[in-house]
Length: 289
Ligand code: GLN
Image (cartoon, rainbow, N blue to C red; front, side, top):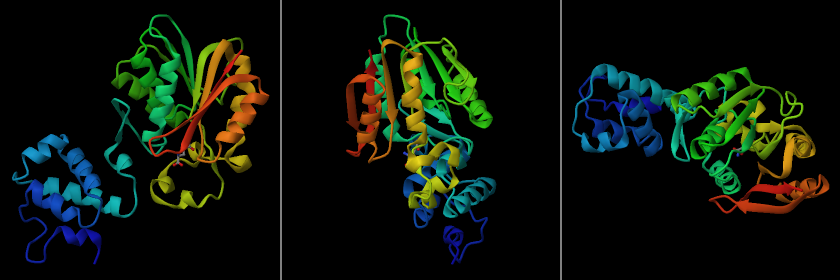
């Protein structure tokens, strides 16, 4: 039986009236319950509280058809964030498309670490390398009004998404630059540089699983066993940091030690590594004296 058929009990026609509660109940047999809720929220353009409060409400034939279409795509593996076109990150919701990596909860650690180094009472220059959806840059900008955030990505598709996200969140203190890492800078200096670069090794079996199958490989995979971009960023960052400026990077579960070695070799001190919410080493950084 195709998963989609489970939505329609045999005794009913596909167009038979169904309530919000019944539809979610049936969908939970074939996809994650939370995914089903997100999809229905998107179809009805509403929030989770509405679905709970109106579980008895009947849906229109069009709404059910739209839901079933999206559910079929989810069953085929498409990430729910690409289906609904959005994902919550830190305290905001961002537009996402297949041009950008879906913001991850573990990346919120990078935001927290960056905020701990960006004072709120004076102007700072912050750089976000490989901004993707702009989630990190825009969140930092929203939390530090006197900071100017420069957000760089080499993907025109990602830049377009990031710019729309900045408009949606009405941030005026982010500048977007389409460029490859530091290539567009000459004498610019930053107080804090953050990056969530691609760090998955080519051929890593995780790339064939779940959401990763649908995400841009350029945002996930780096040569040199996943370390190529991390090496480039650490090697070049000293040229673009103010004295005592900080560089911090998200990295893979087994890359903290090599990041610390590379940072030490490039002249960074006060090195730190922090675990994410799952307890995995996820962010490493240091200060350039
Ligand atoms: N954390 C992501 C994953 O493994 C990878 C993101 C990245 O390469 N920056 O799914």
